[in-house]
Image 1 (cartoon, rainbow, N blue to C red):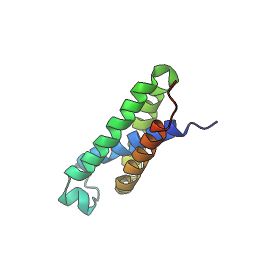
Image 2: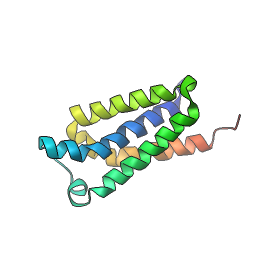
Image 3: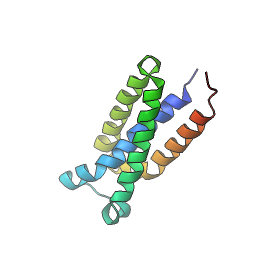
Length: 114
């Protein structure tokens, strides 16, 4: 069985962290940046922070025994890979992070209370 909420939480955390940190790395290493990151740098950071906070809250509510620490670890690894190796892949995070976050929240809301 595939745990879709787990995967969405990892994706939202990784892509959100990538959005939050990309500008710092791009300026330091002279990587290309998109128009939104150049003209309005607060927008990608805000989108990334929302995705990070929601996915961290989901991991916290899930707890350590149900994969909360694994969500954190895999999310950080995804962010390192996405930002460090793909570089301009962070531009697509502007679309992927909000989609993963909305799907995570929608799936989380639809869970039965136990």
